Image 1 (tube, rainbow, N blue to C red):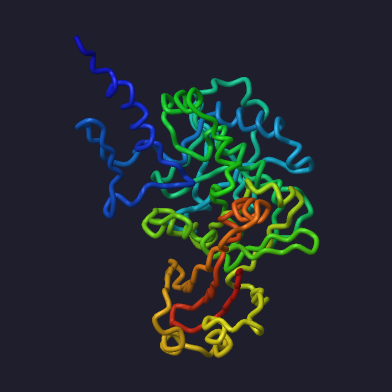
Image 2 (cartoon, rainbow, N blue to C red):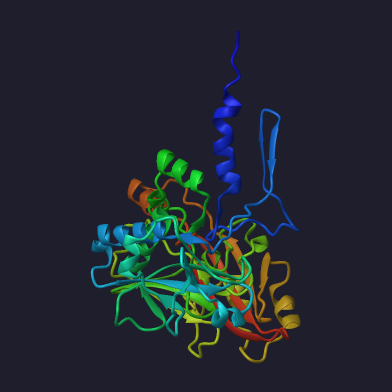
Length: 379
């Protein structure tokens, strides 16, 4: 007699991939896409209905423990939890975050940056008690926020972001998972692995909409490819529902690249910043992108002129709720014929951070007028 046990064994794992709706990787909007999995004639469809902002005290307490365990990444940093509006900025003042206790809702006060700290008294309460907003699900989300005091507003410390990733994912705060999924995750894998991968990184959110992100350590400086901003790293990032208020400030950095130490500065150029972007080698480059860029003028060049100059070059356009647009022109570079072992290792250390090729990024306003441009060429 043959026993059909494989579907029963793997269905929970398939459900794990379909139902675990991460704040970091939200599912596509229900009206535009559905997640589908197949397993021996078993078809599973749909997106998670779990409230994305609902967290438990158990997750908070685990986050506090993880923060202490990995404190060497950011010895001077503090741990808070930050609330973000996803659909409307007007939602933040009325987020009304509270602990749902047996006595009713206990309000959790937020500071001017919409952050709160864990109350030490929570350690004595039922760990399954929930913290959530009164707003309809999906209007806000929140996650750990780890920062070393004294850093400029337009910078973050790479070690802080590495610690933040470990705390967020290993505690479950970066995801919205039912209890049984949290159990399976603990049995079959560690979320810490997501913070060490050289080819991928979870998302973070800057203070304001960003145009570029650079890593700086000593004399070494690297402007990240635009692909690491605004969800472009994901092939279908344009349909993910982070698109509203969070997408224009979303970025990824190479957390798993050990060549960038914890003291590395993550420097932001905001969309509304008056400082110009770093245009690496624009004046010296013979690339057609550079020739076109040298003909453009911020505050003067219009969409029609830009399209005429760029011709048939491959273009990716992102439009934000504010009306601002990011235009990304990208041409991949030729791969070396026979790289040395050391060169190959360097090339694979963090492909998300230093993709080989030529990139021209333009910021346009809602009327199609150029506001900023950035050019990089990596051969």
